[in-house]
Image (tube, rainbow, N blue to C red; front, side, top):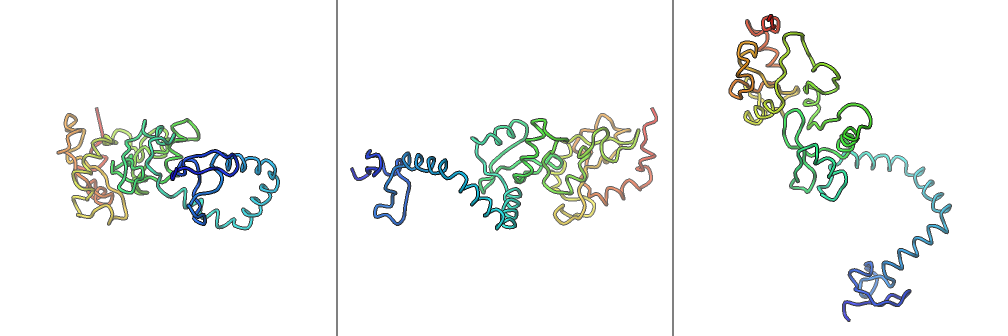
Length: 248
């Protein structure tokens, strides 16, 4: 009987933990009416005072407009909890690599560099919208603005970004991500990690794909360079875009 409590409204005896809500001011720490009776009472109250509640809600929103806007912005830019029962989680897991972070949030792989990161709720909702066919674009997940800017397919509808006829040879996404991981996301020319760079990082073929097409997907043929160093490399003799053009 110690775990049972009688509801003052319906008179039924119920388990304290499952049948009653908690209240610190009560002697036993539980409310006097059960959860079912409380739910029915709240429902009747809302129906009876619908206009009053609506007016109070409107006044509160007007009075706390800036506060609500700031809070909503915080929610949109915060990570999403890892919960397999979420409909959003189920949909996203079909199209993205997902794992649980140490803080209990959803982690995904960046579409450009392949590194794990915690996307914001805003990013996830936009990605889900794209998957469902709403809006425009694919809204893929990127860990930083630099990765977004350097991704050849971001905001492109026909050709990859910086496409040059007969010279462009875009690196395969999986190859690029493996090379970045091998080189610890560090430029092999200037030695700077991408966190210390103001520009993004690229995957560069040591030998032109035109001359070594069979080895184009070989990791040993590739190297990680920052955007600035990559431009310098292609200014050297024999490595210019014009000299690498396909004539066949």
